[in-house]
Image 1 (cartoon, rainbow, N blue to C red):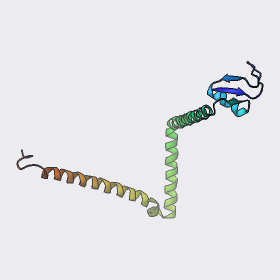
Image 2 (image 1 turned 45 degrees about the vertical axis):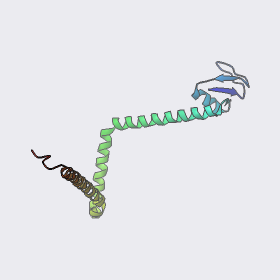
Image 3 (image 1 turned 180 degrees about the vertical axis):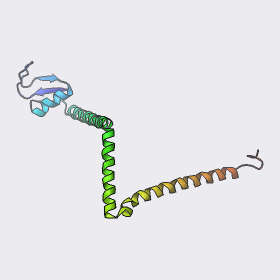
Length: 139
């Protein structure tokens, strides 16, 4: 990305106020954010910033997944300990029926869906048999 320097900058290479120079996006953004330069194309700056942010988010997500994979056993142990503690508290309070009711409802809903799916498949098969001409389908 091309930037125009707003002030002189000395280092490995010297830049004077008003000089224009091309830099990698990350470096150009750093110079603009520090107030040393301004982008020649503001749209290019916005695009570069968005691209870098998306890359950082993607890298963080990858790191999070990798961490979860590396610590899977520890996380599963922690979950089991926490669930055990929840069970102890639930039993101590005597409200297991209320606490576990949503899980029971979920199981009932899943069973109902399976049953309805079987009924629909059976109805579909019955309709196929009714569509046959006399003598078809007989062996």
